[in-house]
Image 1 (tube, rainbow, N blue to C red):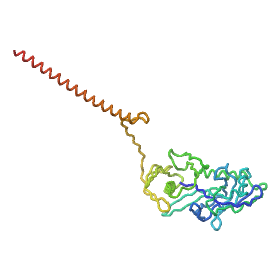
Image 2 (image 1 turned 60 degrees about the vertical axis):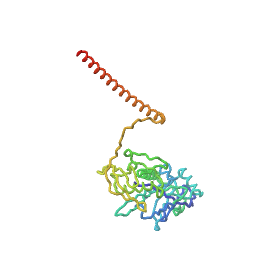
Image 3 (image 1 turned 90 degrees about the vertical axis):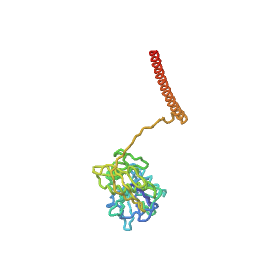
Length: 344
């Protein structure tokens, strides 16, 4: 599935009057602290005509402190010219920037990979910007923060609110939640991904980790099952295979398993899928003892008692058989005695 990625940047503020405006460079085609390079051709086009700015990527209307218009410059940098809100929380952020306490911003984008003809293409959809503390991209800086000449009719609060809500709804629909929120699944029980699953907005996985492999497998599944009418998500991942479910209205709906390989670049290639069913088997447990009810020593004693009982039972059966034989012998002797008396 697609993953929301956060990248940071820096601010220079020349703001003087209320409510204030700013210009920032959200990304540049240079390697950042995560070892990634955000190339201009990777940005999904057209860019949004308006994006929100919040604090610490709250990704909500309540955290919004401003907005701006993005554009890609001739040298490949992504610039945003924007204005602060007149709300108190926005002016607090503006003050921190103006006084030099906060000098960085961050860009949030939805990153996805698609494979065609053996080549993998990365697409990044711009979501929003945020004022943060530490940058990831050294050249993602705020160029200026200057005064906005406020005048009647210059800003339309309803239009702004509509844009903010639209951006927020779009981000949530794509899988974003407020920072630190727990996933809430509205899709099928057990789903780890899917169109109706809200996923935590988080930084990308650590290179070489199992989480990175999970993301790569998710990307490969998305590429194998494109479209809005179906989606795939993993159920179980093994060292060389993955079990996954396909949901939606397609005839491919169901559970599948396939092998996979990972190249040096971390890109996953999926093998041929095979339909599978989940089978649970229950078998009886002999001499079951509830946890904590009987100690091991007691259990051993119980086994010994059982063995003794079995031995005693065998002895009783043997004694009964001997008694029966003795009775039969006595009857034979009695009959023989009667026969002899008759002859005399």
